[in-house]
Length: 461
Image (cartoon, rainbow, N blue to C red):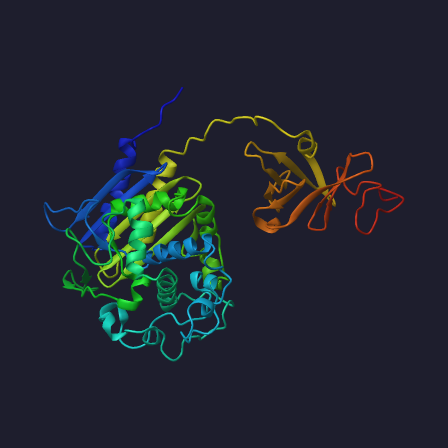
């Protein structure tokens, strides 16, 4: 009998503090605050500051920049789950006259809508939103430098459009919908569109001298859904727990897993960096670890929320400087420190309570041509198919209730698996998206496409 471990070990806490101390010093950040989440709850907070006796805590607000986009994406996915829209709908179906071309809702969420990266005119993050009162002012004349759906091209105006879409379909301002549908249900009382004391001031640190300059804190107006929010390490820790586990009052775990899934073609530099983008979430493969979350930056502030999917550890890092500090690397390191120092203890293995004999009959070794694979019946009621050893195609399959199974990931995602039976009811072979799997390699008498040589297996004579 074991009990849950409520707190991190002293050595782990010291390693976390050391990491943010180095980051604040080397990154020359006026202040930095961080949090770590494990098993759905915050287990550590830390802070460093240049002001003696004034370290921020988890309740001090910082601007979080583009982490705002994840909140906006949650609102859009709620509309989809309610049946109000489909992700493949063209934006124009619900929000006409934008001049944005023909991107779909999904393409805007994934930054594959072909839109420009920034709004035209003066730097929108350092000028009042009143300079861009309408969507036409946000988009400008050259709104689509690329064909929709062809490539990932990060677009801030695209998320302005998604915020306007939410307003159109909800009949209320984006800010009000966000508060009612996300912030209040999740208890994010210290997340807001405008700053609420105590809040950190934003600073620019001179690149060649240890001096600072205050940054303006503008209201972004129409661009707010792309980067307006202020939040705290405490609130973002709770938001990270939601993104990892779901909350049926806001979004299900199944929909959140959909948000984690790469949703568009990545450019070659992104492929080299192990980076992709889902539906409002960034995806990274760093140091052998899959991380999902989002980073953010606006003048005076840097922020990152990062979730180690397999480790069930998340980290939040917030700083009040315009540049110089890699919050995404710091957050990834905080996840790594906890995951390596205190590895996740798996749940006890438990057998199935019952199993259909017709399903159990499928378990065991199969062959695709000469490649041996293992099919297992797992405790969660799924089938798992993968190579007997080494790399190769693998996937889990969910039952459809009619004796067929649908692939959940990888090459076989969405593909249909079915057992083809002989007249006596025994299994002859498995059919998976036209591939034939047999008990023996190129089994005699099996329905292998192209047939089996009648002379059978032989050596070289």
